Amino acid sequence: MVFDLGKAIRRRKAYVSCRLEDFACRRRVRATRMLAAELDRDEDEAARRITALADPVMLANLAEMTGDPRDALVVHHDRCLALAHAELLTGRGDPKPHRLA
Image (cartoon, rainbow, N blue to C red; front, side):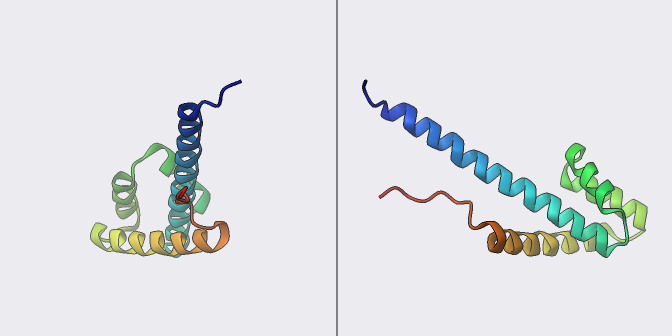
Protein backbone atom coordinates (compact mmCIF):
# COMPACT_ATOMS: atom_id res chain seq x y z
CA MET A 1 0.00 0.00 0.00
CA VAL A 2 1.41 3.39 -1.05
CA PHE A 3 0.67 6.69 0.68
CA ASP A 4 -0.98 9.11 -1.73
CA LEU A 5 0.11 12.62 -0.76
CA GLY A 6 -2.10 14.29 -3.36
CA LYS A 7 -5.19 12.54 -2.02
CA ALA A 8 -4.27 13.51 1.55
CA ILE A 9 -3.85 17.17 0.56
CA ARG A 10 -7.18 17.22 -1.28
CA ARG A 11 -8.89 15.67 1.74
CA ARG A 12 -7.35 18.29 4.04
CA LYS A 13 -8.43 21.12 1.71
CA ALA A 14 -11.99 19.78 1.71
CA TYR A 15 -11.99 19.53 5.51
CA VAL A 16 -10.61 23.05 5.98
CA SER A 17 -13.03 24.60 3.49
CA CYS A 18 -15.96 22.88 5.26
CA ARG A 19 -14.83 24.31 8.59
CA LEU A 20 -14.55 27.81 7.11
CA GLU A 21 -17.97 27.57 5.44
CA ASP A 22 -19.54 26.30 8.68
CA PHE A 23 -18.02 29.19 10.63
CA ALA A 24 -19.20 31.76 8.06
CA CYS A 25 -22.73 30.35 8.07
CA ARG A 26 -22.91 30.33 11.88
CA ARG A 27 -21.60 33.90 11.99
CA ARG A 28 -24.16 35.09 9.47
CA VAL A 29 -27.08 33.43 11.26
CA ARG A 30 -25.96 34.66 14.68
CA ALA A 31 -25.52 38.24 13.41
CA THR A 32 -28.93 38.20 11.73
CA ARG A 33 -30.57 36.92 14.90
CA MET A 34 -28.87 39.69 16.91
CA LEU A 35 -30.04 42.31 14.44
CA ALA A 36 -33.60 40.99 14.48
CA ALA A 37 -33.67 40.92 18.28
CA GLU A 38 -32.46 44.53 18.48
CA LEU A 39 -35.13 45.61 15.98
CA ASP A 40 -37.88 43.64 17.81
CA ARG A 41 -38.41 41.27 14.90
CA ASP A 42 -38.86 37.50 14.92
CA GLU A 43 -35.38 35.95 15.11
CA ASP A 44 -36.44 32.62 13.59
CA GLU A 45 -38.08 34.33 10.62
CA ALA A 46 -34.96 36.41 10.08
CA ALA A 47 -32.78 33.29 10.20
CA ARG A 48 -35.03 31.59 7.63
CA ARG A 49 -34.85 34.61 5.33
CA ILE A 50 -31.08 34.64 5.06
CA THR A 51 -31.08 31.14 3.62
CA ALA A 52 -32.89 32.47 0.55
CA LEU A 53 -31.63 36.05 0.36
CA ALA A 54 -28.24 37.67 0.13
CA ASP A 55 -27.34 40.14 2.88
CA PRO A 56 -27.94 43.32 0.81
CA VAL A 57 -31.39 42.13 -0.25
CA MET A 58 -32.28 41.04 3.28
CA LEU A 59 -31.16 44.40 4.67
CA ALA A 60 -33.19 46.25 2.03
CA ASN A 61 -36.29 44.22 2.95
CA LEU A 62 -35.68 44.85 6.64
CA ALA A 63 -35.30 48.58 5.99
CA GLU A 64 -38.66 48.56 4.21
CA MET A 65 -40.35 46.69 7.04
CA THR A 66 -38.94 48.85 9.84
CA GLY A 67 -38.88 52.19 8.05
CA ASP A 68 -35.27 52.71 9.12
CA PRO A 69 -32.71 54.03 6.64
CA ARG A 70 -30.82 51.25 4.90
CA ASP A 71 -27.41 52.79 5.64
CA ALA A 72 -28.12 52.74 9.37
CA LEU A 73 -29.09 49.06 9.16
CA VAL A 74 -25.90 48.24 7.26
CA VAL A 75 -23.80 49.82 10.01
CA HIS A 76 -25.87 48.01 12.64
CA HIS A 77 -25.50 44.71 10.76
CA ASP A 78 -21.72 45.13 10.47
CA ARG A 79 -21.53 45.65 14.23
CA CYS A 80 -23.61 42.51 14.79
CA LEU A 81 -21.29 40.58 12.44
CA ALA A 82 -18.26 41.69 14.48
CA LEU A 83 -19.95 40.66 17.74
CA ALA A 84 -21.00 37.31 16.30
CA HIS A 85 -17.46 36.70 15.04
CA ALA A 86 -16.00 37.43 18.48
CA GLU A 87 -18.54 35.15 20.19
CA LEU A 88 -17.84 32.30 17.79
CA LEU A 89 -14.08 32.66 18.22
CA THR A 90 -14.56 32.43 21.97
CA GLY A 91 -16.97 29.50 21.81
CA ARG A 92 -15.67 27.42 18.90
CA GLY A 93 -12.11 28.61 18.34
CA ASP A 94 -10.47 30.01 15.25
CA PRO A 95 -11.51 28.10 12.10
CA LYS A 96 -8.40 29.09 10.15
CA PRO A 97 -6.24 26.14 9.19
CA HIS A 98 -3.13 25.36 11.15
CA ARG A 99 0.02 25.50 9.07
CA LEU A 100 1.80 22.21 8.71
CA ALA A 101 5.40 23.27 9.24
